[in-house]
Amino acid sequence: MAISTPSSSSSSSGSSMAALMENGDQLPHVLAVDDSVIDRKLIEKLLKNSSCKVTTAENGPRALEFLGLGDHDRHNSLEEGNVSKVNLIITDYCMPGMTGYDLLKKIKESSVMREVPVVIMSSENVPTRINKCLEEGAQMFMLKPLKQSDIKRLKCHLMNSGS
Image (tube, rainbow, N blue to C red; front, top):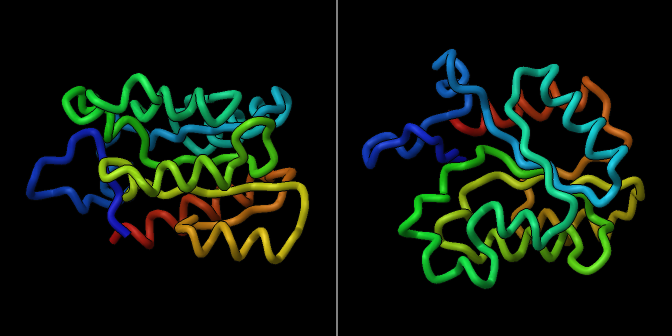
């Protein structure tokens, strides 16, 4: 799976997260989406402990807005180059209004964002939900609460899939 990076040119669009991390000054950028402020803070802390740059959003529409995929951004998202803002999106499944599954579908429908890996997390272990998310294009499904070992596994998985 290719991961778009802020420094990618037309010839290196398949840069892996490993290459990005070797860049030194550029940390992998993760967008963390969760309606729970406690869960957002926990994810942010775990990711920062693993040398990631983190942006948080409290719901799906805010995440789409940040990615340049909000309703009012749709016509100009290509021109502004919002594509490579993030290397990974991690989102809660159960959120009011727009679920993590809905967010995943919107991201995968976007020609400019579909290559960005999306990880869904939930405190409920529901096999049908997990399968639905994976079939729709989620990279992984993780159970909450996340631990540091989950983040390490996530980064290893991303680095391996990018090469």
